[in-house]
Length: 467
Ligand code: FAD
Image (cartoon, rainbow, N blue to C red; front, side, top):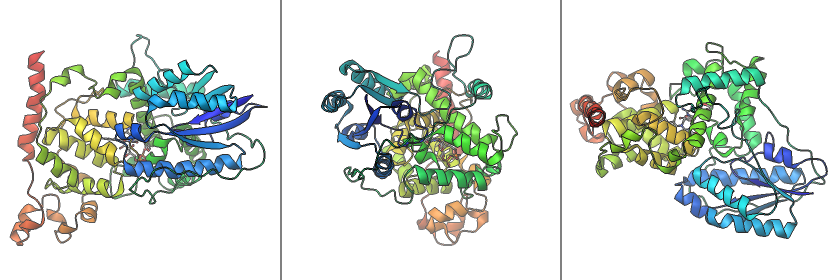
């Protein structure tokens, strides 16, 4: 029996259901990854993520060769060419069955259906990216979950009842092989600041659990505090699985916190958010097609002000924490969750610019860019999403800054022009800069927040009047 495992966003050998199932006794395994640069471009994938993908593929290739599993890297510019390419590989190698883990984007699902229709061998697809399989939680009413809290309750009940499944890496199927080289067209932006490969991801997970998990709930909102795990780049490419995250939490705490208030629960709760957004993407495919969750918000009149958008992108809005966050994103490819919420609220509710432009910009810059979480986060901020949050909840960029970067440490790290501004003035430095003859050093606020907030609320009120 010859089995082919097709790696996609599951770049790991441990806890990989497709690999585990393919490696049944007596099966001869081989592996393939298909690079699709044209498709990645269409999806707006960031250069830094492409670079990180290439480095993680190299690490995967090395893990597979140690297990005696030959690995091939192929290229199909877009998904359209994938079925034929796989068909040729399957025929050349006399493959009896193809194994893969599910991907949830609409184009990925279309591609997979085409592969199933083209190949004349069984194509076996597994859930490898969620603790609780997509679409498997549904309320008794028969409708699907649309709001986080009931979804989370059902998720927790399922995990309490059934636990989670953690699969080992398959046993070596023979002598170690020479490592297959991985050469992808250059990503242009280096991801070297992040170690690649599942071993590195596991070390980072273990260190996080040991040193920061217990205080996560108190520290996670402070961008300068290193309070979060920074594991998102690994979870986005499947270098790490959410089951492995739960196992590490359990190993550290001696039990899995599945109730509010237990130490470590707030981190588990973030993993549930991750699965909630993935659940939404599967159940509501329109989310993959640039559509808002709330259909009525299609009529919102967003601004086309290109200048404001450019100032936001470049971190030149005159709101220090917004600017520091954007410059951090531009430079490092990563942004803290609190800051993602603040800059997304600022773009949509202060500048009144369409959330889809922010979503695309994030995707083009993030090392952890991931459709479900990115779309979910943007729609949450814009008030077009599945959440119960009222549309008139608008973040105040100055008070957020006072609360979450009280000493201005994060701001000063990214805005060197504000280095001399005292803490008392750091969140709104213009008056101080003017008094000290430095008004030119930093741009004036691009909008007046109070007025912009009223306009945002009016935009949504307008929608209600039309219904
Ligand atoms: P931790 O706080 O340590 O959380 C652990 C893991 O849980 C994360 O790695 C991530 O996989 C998941 N997670 C945490 N918070 C969320 C959340 N709110 N929604 C979904 N999953 C979550 N996350 C991405 O992985 N990719 C994105 O493209 C992305 N875009 C976002 C855009 C906006 C506008 C917003 C508000 C949030 C976005 N997020 C995205 C969610 C979140 O900001 C990041 O997952 C988090 O900042 C990653 O840091 P961490 O690994 O230290 O997270």
